[in-house]
Length: 204
Image (tube, helix red, strand yellow):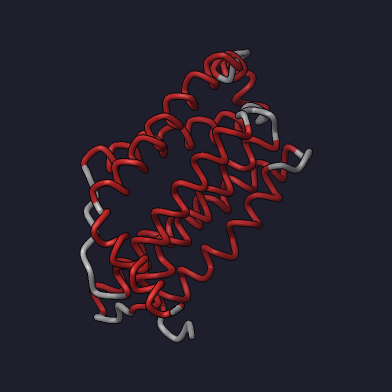
């Protein structure tokens, strides 16, 4: 099933996502710091699996399905961890995770059927801004407990993690995520309607 290197890297990212999640929500500062390394290793596999698949000609339908799914597992693990740590409201995380998983599943299904799915510029900006927010929170929550960083920056990490600031940042990300989700459905309504029609035929 995971006979190719790109698919193996994708599988590793899937496995590392829950490992990262449980490490970052741990009370141990050391474990949280190690979670940052786990996250970066998982993120690096995202670049290498696609690059290797293209260069070696080993792209597969399985890889096209699992790769974006693994990406969302990793980012969702981070946002869920922020909610568990009490940094972000649960409703925001639920909106972000459900939207991203739904859209990713539809895109993977379309790829598997050889169909093109429209991705708007707004959705691309959403991903960019979402990742900025994710890394902002991830780095601050992990590095604030590193001794020499605390000595150098004092209370700056806590200031940057001020609840109203984090709430405003995540509210913007959530609204943009929800908007692009609705836009995605509207832009690809023909494919979605065709997919629903095919499912009704099968059920009939």
